[in-house]
Length: 177
Image 1 (spheres, rainbow, N blue to C red):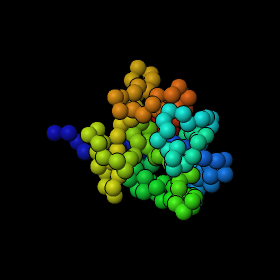
Image 2 (cartoon, helix red, strand yellow):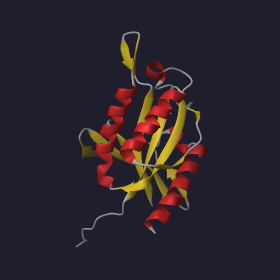
Image 3 (cartoon, one colour):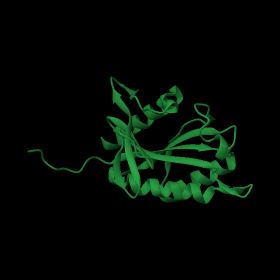
């Protein structure tokens, strides 16, 4: 019989898609108030992998990733997704009579073997966590690199994202010793 044990804490990351530098700054500040100090961030680069957000958020969207110094328990992921959804709502603006997001904030976590992302959408490869939130393994770490899965979003296969995640994993591995 397997022994029940508490898993190692995990490294929280957030992917941000945003429509302006002002909303990025507001989002980052509020994330740090709730989640603590950001230890690293990726470069800001154009978000060009899909037009999914264009109608709601506009054109010329940007992408950036952050990771947090403090480690978290993996079971906090649903709570963190609820928080980031509330933050997205709070940062929204009324445009032509409709409330529109200016930021999309997706929390997830790294552990030694994988990247896990939270989602509010169910699908065959996602597991329900509670509070309307699902989790998916988005990337697996094998052979000294992150490798995609059939459902991995194209932007998570971008070399800039993979480089950021490798650096975040390196820091995480030092943190857990």
